[in-house]
Length: 305
Ligand code: CP
Image (tube, rainbow, N blue to C red; front, side, top):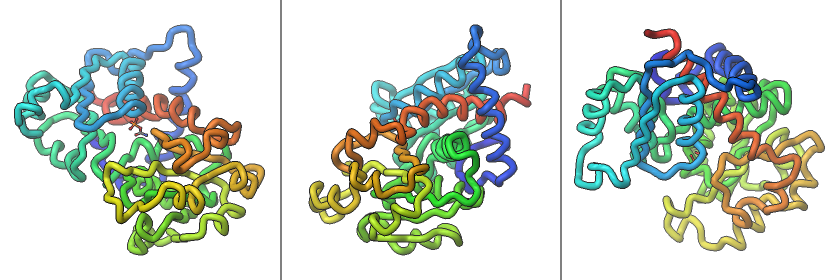
């Protein structure tokens, strides 16, 4: 594959190959020499039009561990603020010899547009409410490493599904890998139409009835910046019905894990003691993000001179 734009582009063989490479890359982190020479002489540009902590830094660490040169471009403080278009910015980066562009953009579809303007690989690091495929890859990798498999798992994705690129990419990839996904949240944030995204997708508005059957409970951030008050009338009411607190954690099967892509709103969608509990994989997801993004860069760039 040349680009990574959508989880829908990944078949089970390719996704499993990325997981297998990530598992090998994870051993690099434990070595005395943490770098591989694979991408020496190659340039990876992080082109971020939206804020990020985990995705931008983990792509940077991943590229550096593969010995690539990394250019971090943030729209804030750049000529984008003077009105420069994405196309002209892309041409500028192309002129500097970018071999790969990792892009985060508020507009759904921006990474796809970018593929027309740069010669190198484009990796979608989150586009609007559309997709975040490397997040889905690191989440499924985390499930595989914690639960031993992805196929056959019952995964509940809970909260602000409507605005979540993480939910969409995970629903697509989990279906490809043979898991059963149930989207859970209030009707304003889980539109019934989302149920047709994949044939195996379920929708529920009753969190408590889903909990006893879940192997994985993936909580989503309430994205207040993308909604108006009509979608989200009361934080207290939301927490009461859809927040993951200690009482709900106890209703989950003993083996079940809690995930969250971050950043979290503690006390809005998840209780602090649940986020920090041994059953939470939140910190592990961040660490796995580096290995998975190393695997993606390796697969997209490693084989080409
Ligand atoms: N999960 C995630 O995309 O986090 P950031 O917004 O910090 O990159």
